[in-house]
Image (cartoon, rainbow, N blue to C red; front, top):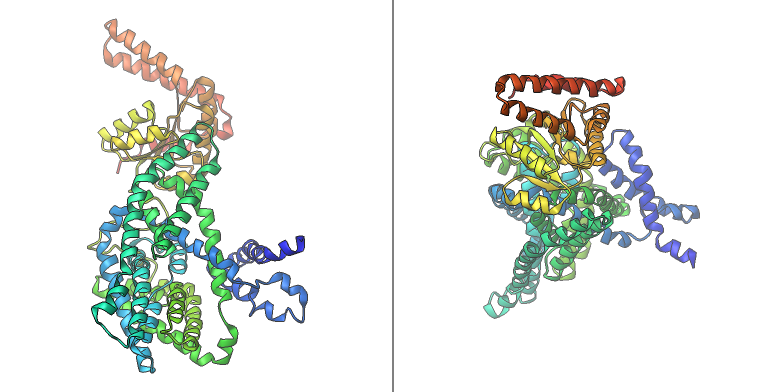
Length: 610
């Protein structure tokens, strides 16, 4: 029985071994992890080591026999990627990008479809069959292009924004394309009869998709925030982290399944869920919890693409397969380059954009297989086309590298003049802030009010969902999350912030945040609230720029009020208070171990403001 169960999970074990061994190995050789997963798929698939298992039976334990077992995980990987994209976007950002998404992106899909379909018609295919092939091959690979470009640091500026807009438009077009394939099948069965009684029922298939899309948006707006608030409250009351992770997974998978039920793609449902959650205070915490799942499941997708490469078909007709892949890529590169130039990009950014969008994408398999099921695409030709599409997908990392070299190191970061700051870098999606405030209770809120009064930008983080909700109602940029984790600090923009203020009243949590922040940046101004003198000494030992002990400050404030009320001049009193505060600071710092005192940031206190 154990052997049977071992057989059931053997393919998954092989994949995990590839993720833990092969990919880190190629990463050490400065090779893209995406290429590592793709190569692992080819090597571990039936056409790789699997073809020698008859001679060396032990090789069967190192190969993936049934790619279908990984197919559902692959689909989840793409859904997780689209969900993360939605988190980075928000409805406001999507609205701001509408010109690129619904202009450039949709026109690219239409132009590539027409050009590729015309090519297949010249090869003798019928109009309906050529249209299906054109629609499938017009799309690019979101799952391949975005990770490769992010890895190369090209998601900011003109190239990243334009590429992302095109990929988003393609993802939105998948559902209409699938419905169109069904309509084309109806026309093919009726010899192109366009009478209303024939075409009407086919067009009615659009209705469930539109209704489903509206219901997803409506349900998400009503349900998602209360759900996450409920789980966040249980966490702040001592609940488990696993509950938050489980809810994130439920939202992604549930939205995807609901979208499928209405005839939409699973990834589109996940994208909508991400867009809805991007407007909430839980955005950054969700992103931290989902990131590991996204990376691993996308790895399954890449391995599946590698397994799908039919080496026998390539060997049987190498010129035909590679020639078709080259022709497909060349046509798309030429069209995308022309459209990108039309939309205002410079020649070099347009070339880089065209090169990464030229290869085929994962949805080609979905659309072309649907065409075969509907009986409007030749199985033999479709299989040959899919092999060529797979070959072209393997070139995405190479195209990205070539595009970056041809464009130059800075060409992709130049802004598009008529599209404002919509960069899609790996950091936070809100504007960079000068100050990070950890803890938004009475102390943190007062700090925020003073910063706002003096025109200084800030981002605040708190673990109490009620406090976060109250802050957001008052118009402050407050997020839910644990700033004791380096990932949360990174998403809040610690890399570019000038100062970090820790205002929490729990000494151990203050220490956690200070240690995490100082480990990430030695030069940031770090000011922390201390419980008492001993806590202040400990904070200076951890590397804070300034520690503000509650007991000491309360005593100084009382003394100031007494002296002023007794009639002493205000200037003289304030000078003596500041002198005493500096004396206390010197004592606390002297009590901290010499090797742990923070010196570099002291100079930043006097640095000129930008």
